[in-house]
Length: 383
Image 1 (cartoon, one colour):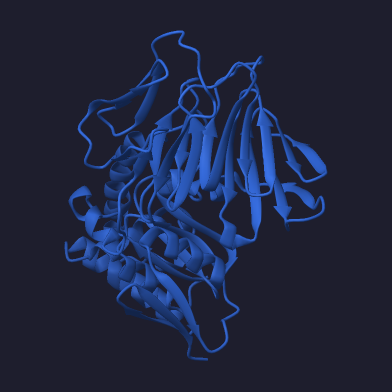
Image 2: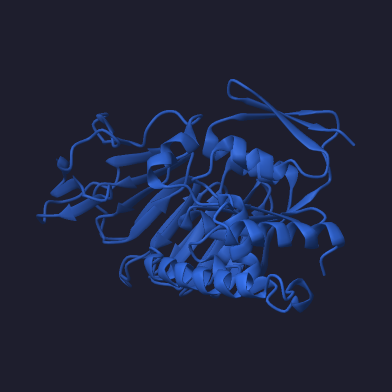
């Protein structure tokens, strides 16, 4: 239930919406309240009942249109954290439960959101040639071992086998993404990989006859083409993931100190030193440490683990260092702490299209402040 201050704020925003003076943040708040708290009948009075009804009708139409336009890039269906949130707004619920909203920015503004990010996705061919993928013209950009590499209209890197030329798996290509960028690639076997920010994928231009092995540093989402005769193997940190055809996410940033494999479809075998587990859809295998066979299996929050595919940060009971590592990777900044690290826990979603300063404003609740100088963020706990 709302306290008196929150109730008055709600009524003020409702009136501003009725008169056409509501800000983007206020409209986003009302959009969420439309579904989340439709049972708060004590908020609706004879004075604002008509405005509330008009707001609901207008927002319902807007949200329905946005949901239709928000098709996910994968075969699985991503259910939003709240029904209204498919494309309409982003939300962060932090610490004590305070709620903040920030509208998704128009496309023309999204480049401003990554003002701290530098560099571009690059492809390094087996002969050492490096191609900057953001400036490369569309169409064919290279060919090797009977494979043509093209950059599609949507920016996807596509490998297409054109001959039966004998392949050499030792001839490796390397796809790298800088901070603030993710990239999609279709491998020679028609498997699709989405590579997250600050990540590297190493793979042969053409897979050999025995297996399909790639090496990952960072994070990637895999949709693997079935080929029972050639298992697909992902080497990531200290773990090895073997599949035949499936959909899964691997998070293996070295600075996190662990590797996570989250399965959405099919089945995979995760090996770590001398230990191994087979996980099923909806499960996650976590490998910790460089020695021993420490693997544990938990029920996965698949929406949280794959939120980056939908251009979202997702926080569910995450501590501040974990949150700030995600921020650092996306905005290409360094994080420093002044004094002790606050023991806050964070819940909610924030669009990765948001400006860095807006993200920090959302996170600044409960006495946490951020000082940004050049590419360094200093985190201070005022409590």
